[in-house]
Image (cartoon, rainbow, N blue to C red; front, side, top):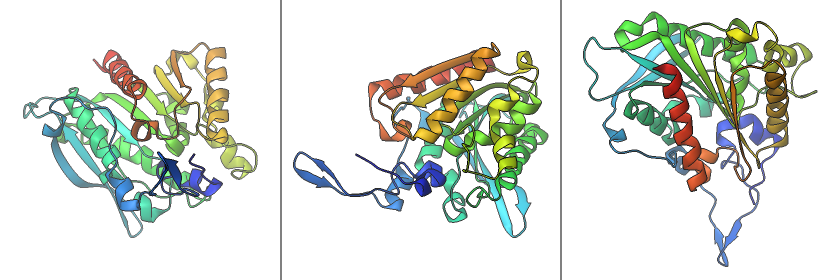
Length: 297
C-alpha cells in the first residue's frame, strides 16, 4: 500500500508516486519505486484514436512573476481552420515546490489531457504557476491561475478559442484556486470539473484568513443559480483532508441546490486517472469528457 505524508499532500500532483514508504510486494517480488523521471512520463489511462495528432504550441509566456517566466501550452484539433474557434478546457495543476511545478505542463499526465481535449474538438490549455510555498503564498499561486484564464480570453483570437466557452478542470490542491471562479461566477466559465481536489483547508493547515478565503464552499451561498454546472470526482482511497473538504463542499452544494454531478470512486486513489488502470477509471474520464461536451457546445 502507498502511504504519503502531509508533505506529500502538499506536493499534490506528484504525491501519488513521488513519496513512497517501503516497497510493494507483487507476486512475491518487490516492486521498484518509480523515479521522478518515470513519474513525469506517466500518462492518463484513457486514450482515444488520433489523440497524438493534436497540434501543439508550446512555451507561450502568459505572465512574468519577478524572475520567473510562467508558461502555457495549447493543444488544438488537427483539423482546426485558420479562422475557426473552439471552446477551451483549462487544466489547473495542484501545488508543489517550484522545482516540480516549473515543468509540470510537460508531464505525461497533462500532455495526454491536452491531447484528449484536442481529440474531442476542444483547445486544451496546460500551464505552470508558482508554488504556494507550504501555504504561505497561496494568493500568489491563485493570482497566476486567474491571470492565465484572463490571458487566454484576451488572446482568444490568436489561439482559435471561443473566449466565452471555457471549462476549468482542476486537480488535487488546484481545487482551492477555484476561489475566483466560484466567488465571481463569470458567465464565460460554462462548466467546472474537479478531480481528487482539495477544496478547502482544515483547521491548522493554513493561516485562518487563508483558510476562510480558499475554502471554496464558502462561496456557494452567493448567487448559487449563477454558478456553472460542476462535476466533482472523489477517490474513496484519497487522503482524509482532501476527502473531508470534498464532502463539505458537496453537502453545501446540495443545500444550495446547484447543478452538481458527483462521482464517488470507492477504489480510487489520489491521481486515479494515472494510477488506477481500470475500466472504472476509463468510464469516469469518458463521462467527464461527455459532461464537458454537454456544456461547451
